[in-house]
Image: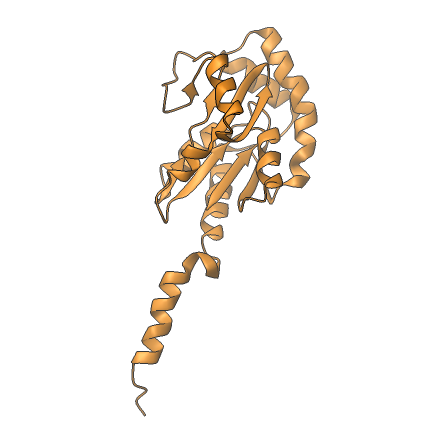
Length: 204
């Protein structure tokens, strides 16, 4: 199953995903490609695949992205190979922007869409400034974009309001776990149970 986690920059998507991935079996993180410069704490291939603008453009021309967009002046994309590399029975979690989420929905790919929302605007500004990875102009750009992105929440299946990290983590974990309980996703286990009802003799 594909889980698409989206929301404004600074809302806490990456933190929530990291916490849930550490507790949820049979789930993996989809590593996106980006032209954004690597931050000191980031590792190529773990946080993002950091590529040049030329390499990214070549992948666009070759149709190698499931979705891609220009966000905050940089390009981001999810490669088809990244999604297709998931092993059977392993869920894939995407951390992408609203534009990318819309593209995945438009291509009719089966997925669960979760929107992470900050509690209030000033808290989002505080988080963006506190993380210290962007200068004032970049922070201002992200906040301007957030005013439009926040209105996209109605396009999603679920909304997690990240006002308290523990509560938000619990909510996201619950969403992922509950989505695994649909009959179609448990077909093999259900089939085995049904066979037992056919094979076992009913004793009076």
